Image (tube, rainbow, N blue to C red; front, side, top):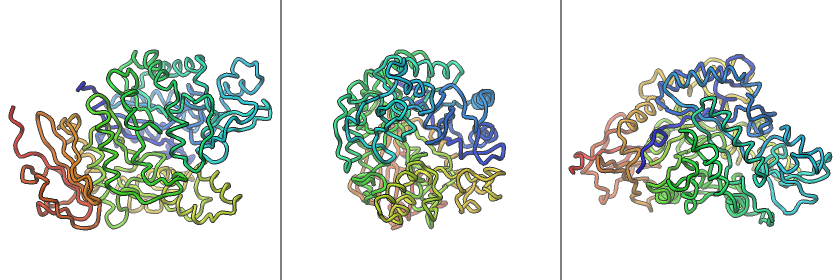
Length: 552
């Protein structure tokens, strides 16, 4: 396998609005991130990924870009960005930005020009139609076709109506994106996470969809358009091949069978895919707010399938939460009695699989879902639109509230909990989104002062992973695939062998006799004392290392 710096990296995702506010306006900013560089360096991460920082009217918190080469006013200035980049590099870390190539803001100059007339040179930067050609629906409720009074035609928006989709069929649009990427690379950034890249190629006959099968629609219609691979390879040739950078493609709608088309060594595309199959595991036919029960056996199989699909020829991200999904300890762990134990267990999973781990801000201190009492307290455009839709249809909004409390994106967007002072030390002003009320108990200051904290567990495990490359490059094999409580797997290479044991339940579980425990010694675990060899306690996680190194 080809070994590279980015395969060995651990990424830390910052949601800038919610990380740290330096000027008291209630919104996190670039100077606030600079203030916390030492915290991130202490944790031991290699790459900092910033969710969008470009100029934006913030309809979708920065994922609606009005100027790709300017900094959002609320976040600071280009000079402050340069200071942040220098501070990150000074600590030996790298910085990647979030690029949004599928759509712009409707306030972007391109779209404002595009609306003016059918003959405008920017007209073909977007998808305009005299009538909606299909019944496509937006991710954020309602039709994906919006009528524009000035233009007297409809434009396509797979997300908010303030996020018109860019027309990648137009070579000028592609060149605009390449120029933007060159601009940032020449500034010295170290890569991009590329937002919803599988949508940049459209099926131009716009086939009708079954609106009751949204997940199927995403895979079969919105993603994987006919020119997707061609566009990604052109992007590599025109931009990425010229720099030594990290590129993570948000692989929504891409299944394992197609992975190597984009991240294989011969594909000349992106470095890795940030896939979604496990984080959408409980989506019902109606999508995320129609949750259904999920099984651990299915969850495990997804990881096994993706590992097999990319093998030693490609690379993937390992992720359990981010700005679009609930807090991982609330979703895949147990966020009350076993919050610390289960958060540490999930850390083991995140940091011992093959691929690049992505830690989302706050996971390293065990931040939880927020449970606001009313729908009005949620800021997310997705929830706001859905709330209005449910009211119009006369549906029970209490049922929606319950689903949002479990699944909503604002669960992960509440401000970072730095300490037990007012507003969790995030801001001296009024926070843009209410702070999770549990901040006096769950905060970074408390975690730093407690040697047994989740933070110190992450720090220790990160250092161990870095020192033991088998956990990075070694092969992966899932054991006990049918178990609904145990997630057990092997990692090995010519140098070393590891066995990872994770109990995803509150029950004490006896490890089946066909798991070769006698060959291994425990090197890491989320309990203070080593337990009975063949019994895993409630939410116990162990990393076991072979007693003897493999002799050549």
